[in-house]
Length: 376
Image 1: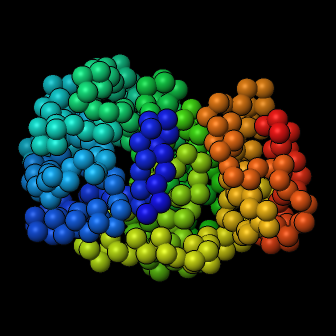
Image 2 (image 1 turned 90 degrees about the horizontal axis):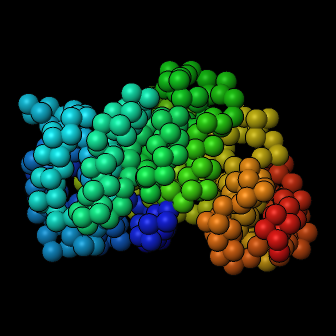
């Protein structure tokens, strides 16, 4: 299993994580089997937004003495009033459900401010006492880090700019990134009409990288629609490996959380770890949009291998972010770039990468720019 640091938290998460939603309503024996297989496979992060008492108790029992091996995302504001899942911004109600979560698990690694998708959500969380409650929980040691969940790049940006969250769970997949937030991607009938990556979403990922805010990914498969011949917005379905690899290629992403209700589904996701570069390749889904990506790196790694060992996609990620902040490159971005085994200055101008790039990226020029910007 590959581990990645979650922003500046100091915690390392498995690149394949577990979304707990599909364990809801499953018998305890199945929950134990899935979580046991996940832990044995190196999975160490679980999203537990579900407020129902039975699923929480089943997961707590399944983890048992292995609780410390799993990073848990628990959500503040996810409630089960009248046995119906809902969002509550009422502080006493939110506290009651979250404190029950603490009773079962002892502590929560990532206390998530739940579902910030609109201006109203933002103000009800940050002005209504829930953010202050999360901060108090952290000060008391009940949660280790503060995060939030969102599907909206605009609302997410507002939350990050408060300086409070250390990480977020966000919906990341190729279809969502190609479609502006105000549109419904699965209403599209011809993905060739998409007009490049949504700039708001791309800017959000860059902001997270700049601020050291780690991202865990929900909707990696688009609720299964990206894998479906009937529902995919593309000419053909994507594979699990392509969906996972796309999510993991975005700036600041630490883990793709995959919803699994069986050991078989979990093993199918874990197969990504042994997949080939060809099996992970998502660039063909952008080929019809070649004009929109001409000259821009999409981090697909078609350019690899580099004869001197440069991770060309990684250099481009940090270069793209730094070009937005030439006068004040964020220290975290400098640190990440500095940790690369081979940097832009190592380029020998062989141009083998440019011959392989589907999008005509001027790699040699960009490697020189990176060396200049980062002062090599």
